[in-house]
Length: 117
Image 1 (tube, rainbow, N blue to C red):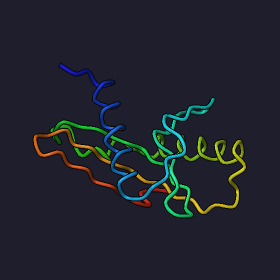
Image 2 (image 1 turned 60 degrees about the vertical axis):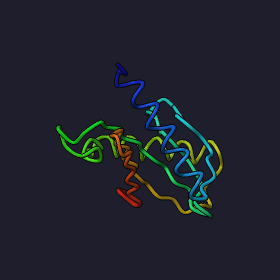
Image 3 (image 1 turned 180 degrees about the vertical axis):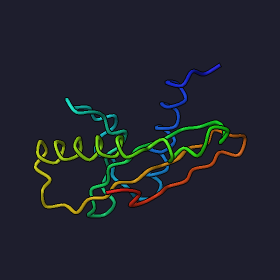
Image 4 (image 1 turned 30 degrees about the horizontal axis):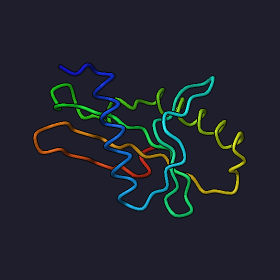
């Protein structure tokens, strides 16, 4: 039986493959700094995208995106600002997305673009 960490890693891998197959260029995976972590960082053409991946096996306790509350959003935003400064990416437009991965018999991926800012 998989634990939550294994499910999360599996979901991130599925999300990464989904993004690559849709033309995204992956810049970083599980980026960490003193503020927090961002699951995936990618370029969608000329837009810098910070992606939070949420993986679930069912919706018994709600939809995956609901786990990205305001506090989590703020942490991702502050973390992304540090990433931008460290990597001198100030000239890019940016976007915050959530990808829901449902590990059900019929795998479901839901990509929510511009999910917060």
